[in-house]
Image (cartoon, rainbow, N blue to C red; front, side):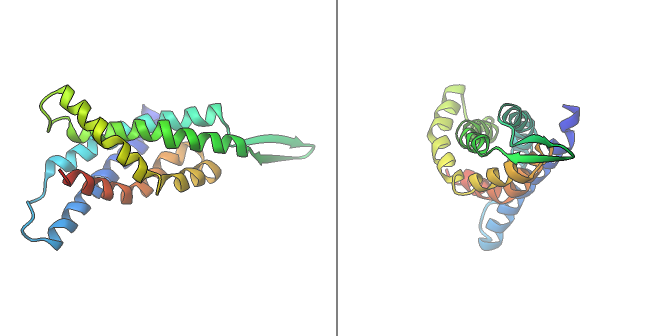
Length: 178
C-alpha cells in the first residue's frame, strides 16, 4: 500500500472535493436546498480511499497481462511498438469488469450507512450499477484509451482521478436523486 499512498490520498481529496463542489453548486442555484451534507463528503472520501487502492492493483494487473508496448532492440536504438490488440483487450476489460467493480465500490460506500440491511444494500447496488455503467461509457473509454497509450501505469490512477473530478460531480448529483 505504501507505494500507492500518494494516489490514494489524491483520489480521496479529489472525490470529496467533487462532492462538495456538486453540493455547493446545488445550493447556489437553489437557496432552499438542504444544507451541506458532510456525511456525503466523507462517503466520497472513503470511496476514494478504497477505490484508488483497488484501481492501482487493477491497472497493474491489466498492464502485466496486456502490456501496451513491446520493446524491440534494433541494434543500437530501443524501439517501442504499440500493442493495439492489448490496448483493445484492456479497454474492453476496463469498461466492463473494471467499471462494474469501481461502481459497485461507489454504491456500497455511498449507501452503506444509509440503508437498513445488507439485502437492501445489495438490491440498491443491483438497481443502480447498470445505469451507472452505461453513463460511464460516455466518459471513461476515451480516458482509458489515453491512459493506456500515453500514461505510465504508476500515474494512471492519478489521471483517472483528475478526469474523475467531473465524473464524481455527476456521481454526487446521482446520489442526491432518491
